[in-house]
Image (cartoon, rainbow, N blue to C red):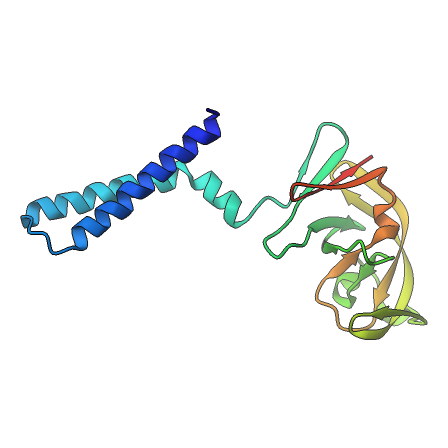
Length: 193
């Protein structure tokens, strides 16, 4: 039995004791008030111990770590609860959140993210067009001085700025192909160089 299995067994046992005890205490069984109060405090104590002991697991389940870096030139991105993969890249030294979209060709910035990365929208020419699920949008081609994540940095990276409404910038295949290998395995997207 692995340490994870033992940990889960302890957690489930504690959960059963707490739930069973709370059911026992809420029924109409005649107990003295002191015994009932003492039992409630015992269950609160064990419940608190279970939460404290499992806080790392609970926190990881509710909000999984977005990214971690391996020693082997890999970036591992966890799938989030909505089924998407999110990543934060540094564009011109500014953190910008992206949704990884293997169906998108380009790295596509929202207008707000483009401004945050130091671009002046009034100098851009929105002459390009893209067909999206929401219809046609106008785009402006740009070059980003630097795009960085962890120890990896690329220079003069082509991207486009979307002139339409978009909630989050998209990280498409043009940038993803800079990685030697893209793999999706057990809820993780692994980028290797």
